[in-house]
Length: 212
Picture (cartoon, rainbow, N blue to C red):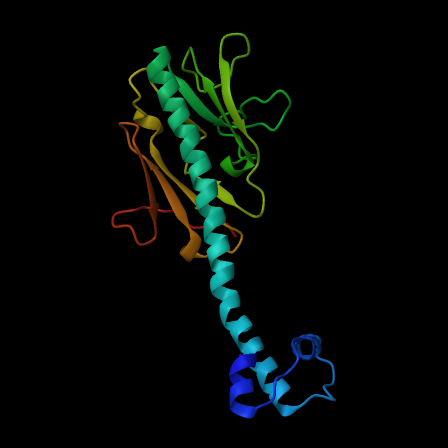
């Protein structure tokens, strides 16, 4: 922009002076001692920055959601693979946040999936980590940053020795701090154990509302 105005006017605004103008503009201070060309260049730069700020913010927000979704999908894949490999059930439960970690009691509303989860070999298939018989495969801490991860009436996801999810199948809905549908994602777990990532534009996807 500075070079363009230089060609048109024969005057080359100094970059440091342009920076000073931008600083004054964004602080709301009184502007004085600057040329019209410098003011025009600064205004053009400010308009570009403002125009790009929302798309850039949305890009990073969407990347954060995608990263969190893939973290959970990776845990699902780990559980399913372990169940098939070891020939006994493997489960995911909501973490109780303790050290060492365990599962929250089923039907306990005090914790939700965004508080973290536990992936473990579930030898007796009771959807609860039993120290001494079960093995922790991985533990994921709280998502934080205003994220939510919810599924209706399902505090446990379990795969049997054949990798079948059965009655623990369903769709988890992930929302970021904005709670906007634009960034909402769903993690569908079929009864056969397969996983599909969906959004609000995916045909036949059933996503729950983001918590307020």
